[in-house]
Image 1 (cartoon, rainbow, N blue to C red):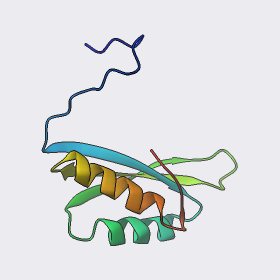
Image 2: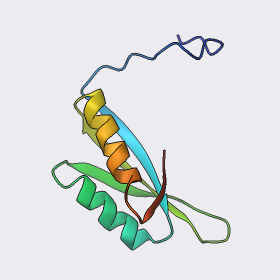
Image 3: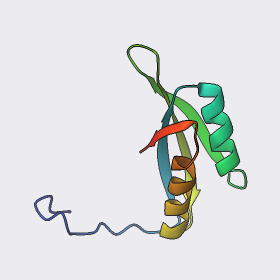
Image 4: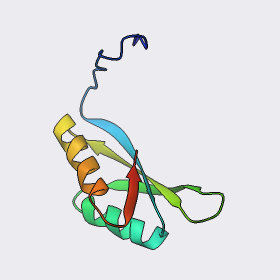
Length: 89
């Protein structure tokens, strides 16, 4: 169990593992294209996650198997660097 009072404690993750990225932007079509381009060589599942109250933002959840911390971080950085992506969680 992780002690939430000690934020310096690192959680150990065993790889390969399933990882989910929530990707937020303004256009579902452009988000789908961006995710597809970043994850082109990976098998992944994509589903609608949420829509903002005023309808300006939409989020999609991409689920896939990552092989390592480096791969997980690389995917995060590549998704975040896309112009059509506002936020990656």
